[in-house]
Image (cartoon, helix red, strand yellow):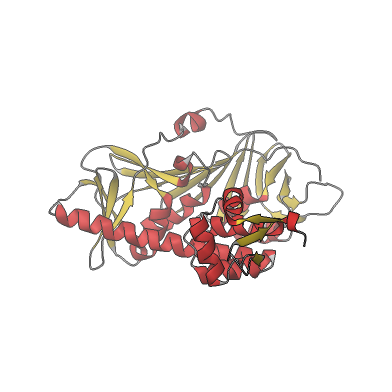
Length: 357
């Protein structure tokens, strides 16, 4: 290493975004020792090759990773580093969810725990199932927090839950044991609902109340759960549903065999060929054989392509043993319908764009 490859601590600090005091701290901790220390003056010099490690260290500390975790990530290979990062983020999210719940409980206590507007009283297992089914159509996108939320509409004798990631739309309507006191709608944070679902499932009857900036899930015999509402406007899903064209082909297929057929073709895209008395699932390249599932088909034969990540979650969360596919053409949204005990789940998904096989 030549002297030209070295830089004093001040210059190194400016290149890496770390302060000189932070660099001394990380040097003393063994995370980032200087490349050379002048034995007379004690001045510290760093090598150009250390810049990327220092920048990575700074970014890891910015996400509150402890020193031991930082060292493990910096010294790990790419796959192990990614695993350690995912584990750290999961802990952060869990801690944040716990803190939100505790803050909500404190806020409620300070306000005298006044009851909010009754949205509905719903059976806990039914509500938990519906939340988990509909949340499969959410997405986390920077600047579009509303796509990670679940839109709740209460009124009359129904409670409707809807989510969309712009590539698919999922909606489920519940018949509450006790309806809303008045009409209400809002978009509830999906992560909050996802975290609350296990406790909701264990509660026979859940009272859902709307309060400013959120909803309360009142769980008799358990700690109530607060879920935030999102301020952004939810996409106009009613317009999407109303604009759907006439159904040209309808296929009723057993759910489990269709799921198994999808699992046998795990590529990014999959093609459904609907004709006669069957639905054939295969890769986009028609030269490769597919898996045939017996079905009741009405209408014209049709071939339609999907992104696997769009189709599989929609099918896996459908209710009951059968699913109905309402098709409108090879380039039109498809509706998946399933019913059990009078419940209806509808997922409308645009066809995947044309990709080479």
